[in-house]
Length: 446
Ligand SMILES: [Zn+2]
Image 1 (cartoon, rainbow, N blue to C red):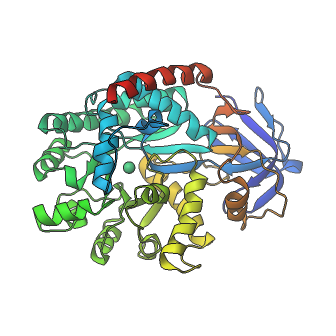
Image 2: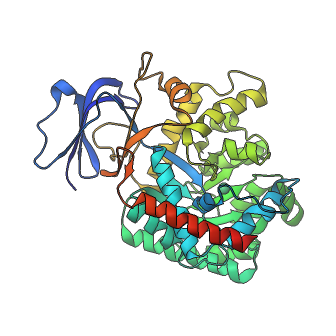
Image 3: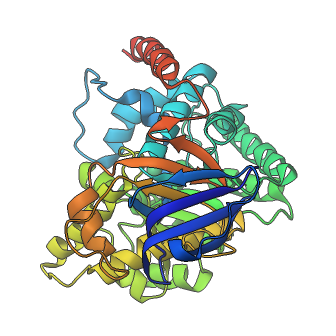
């Protein structure tokens, strides 16, 4: 990999101050030097120089829970969808969509989703995939699109579930374990594998025990939806006489690499169990609003020391929108304008999301300082007011949200987008092929 010298950048380092007119030298997959333009080194031989003319340089964003498979659902209206509660949204829409996914549609969903994430400044994703009629090989198809071709950093897993019978559950287990071993053997620090589980209410004790048996002594984290709607608790209390978090703890699912999405319906004891287990909780505020499931106690869980990150649950690609939604929804829910200040938002998005990457991928990202992995974005933003180390959140949430105008993205020292052009694939061809795949997908569901 050739060295990259970024010049004349306004660098928000995330912890070491703001550099007004600075440089960043990237060597291999890491940041080698950072400083003021006056101190910049002579570029190493063959280095690529990028003059960003005062644009903003930030650490790449992380989306800690998403569903790339939703990419081909944009604009899809299905007849007969009239959900009264959360479970019916799954049954009437998402489970009809995911059953119609084949390898081609999985690949194009991942490719389009990946492109849109890069364009929104996201350099790491944690995906949660489902395609009950095309399980085996699905994770490698996603990996080919997002890691090999687009160059993103990605954690992948398959949503194991009993909802389509025991054979599909067994296939889900096999797909996860095979991909976990494959990812370990690859040794690519852009790739991580978790063991995917849909949610407690679609998983029997038998399936979870079989999964644990088959995992053996592998040290794997899990990725599961947790108490998103009320169904999860109702089911667990009825069938197992315990709450969902107690059930998952008793089955050995909670550890410090386990990613739990949502956690909307938890009691205080369950939150204490999560804190004790050191598990990761991912908040998805826009999805929760869209599905009308309720408001997770994010300030309370942060207060208990739980590692709370931010995802989007497949609700678009633009993380700043979810970041802003998070700052709004907790204030409204608690009728307290101090319930989610910029300090807490910063902790979730600019500390915890990067801590999650460290746990799952074993690399340091999220700060622009020597020794960190070079996961960076250049944003076309000239601040009309003073921009400091401490007030970036205001610029993001009132100047860049909705359209972050990311020009260039670098992941693990590789330029994956330059001047808005994705380098790994022919974008126009990808969108044309995706439209064809989506058309066939929609016809099949309807
Ligand atoms: Zn989800």
